[in-house]
Length: 77
Image (cartoon, rainbow, N blue to C red; front, side, top):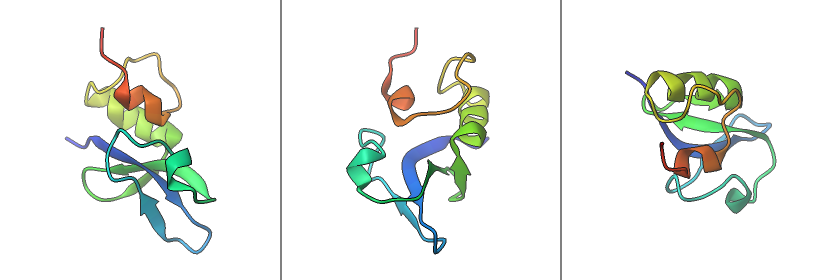
């Protein structure tokens, strides 16, 4: 099963800049482009697809529609 690993930004040239850990936010990357996440299989996913993956992996609550980096750092209830 795929999981969401770290926040990432996909630049206009297609290069993906990824965070070192879940503790970093997109803002920490200081890069312009499409905000998203790197998945466990190494692919880049936008916020909505990443939310779907994270919900299936039970990393976040089912109520999240668009994943944000802080969603991965919140404690599950």
